[in-house]
Amino acid sequence: MVFWAVCEDLWRIISNSFMLPVLIFKVSNVYYNLCKTAVIMPYLDCVAKRALPLLQKNLSDAHFRVTNNCMIAFNNIIEIIFPGRCVVCGSAAELENRFLCGPCCEGVSRLQTPICSCCGNSLFCGREQTESYLCGACLRKKPEFDLARSFFIYKKTVRSLVAGLKYNNDTAVLNGIKELVAACDLREFADCELVLPVPLHGTRLRQRGFNQALHLSRIFFSARRSEIDPFLLTRPIKTVPQTELSGRQRRQNLRNAFAVADPDVVRGKSICLVDDVYTTGTTVNECSRVLRRYSCKTVKVLTLARVNPD
Ligand SMILES: [Zn+2]
Ligand SMILES: [Zn+2]
Image (cartoon, rainbow, N blue to C red):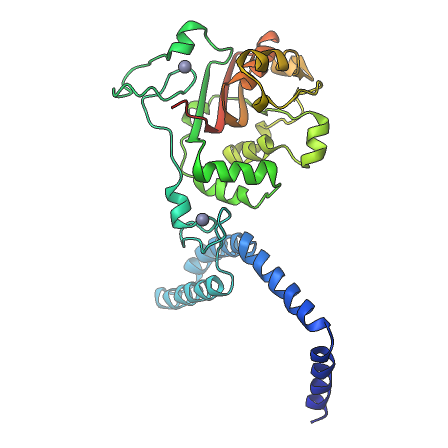
């Protein structure tokens, strides 16, 4: 009885004070953020993946079935309490895609073949990709890199993901990118020994707090993290943003902007350069030119998305 009396007193104090709306707001805010990033889900997944084989080994078939069903039920309850939220639009995510909803998944366009064997540009020639083709630009002047590939076309969902990361510092979108990239083919990059994210100038890095190309490198090459070197390629000269410039100005703007910290590491290596978006290719071309100066073996470029010139 004393306990309930204390509770009643406490409730009266809280509800009469201005604290209650603040408290409700705080709790709902924490809950919303938990749902938005679904922080708890990867950990639960990880526990389930480790626990299931152990249980399967040590339990009889009937017991395992019961335990497994209990775990599925537990997972469903967790889904109700912490529903996955789409990192792009905030609506309920799909069960198989915990960080993207159905309409946002449909807004993702993969690059269609045939593509230019060198720069990876879509060719729209209606032929099958049975042999290697070069686009007009690569025929006129061969790029400094050996090949460039992108996973997606830079529009709709992918554009929102990149904008969230670069301009709103929303690293929760990385979960959405991870989901999209999981099914992508990286066979053309199997021979790369070094993965170099395109660097940011120090001032820009301090403003943003992270280099998005490094985050993407870690997603693309999650099983080969030891090959990622974020310090080898540097950007000692501050340049104006490329988006404000024409083709010729872009090239002039980036002249000598990049440098290599230790040329001996680069010599004779197959290198993969990683960036977020391939627009005109000027940035990765300039990075490749600097790497070639130190006699690397090959330079391949991998970007999340590509601006389609249609
Ligand atoms: Zn969505
Ligand atoms: Zn090309």
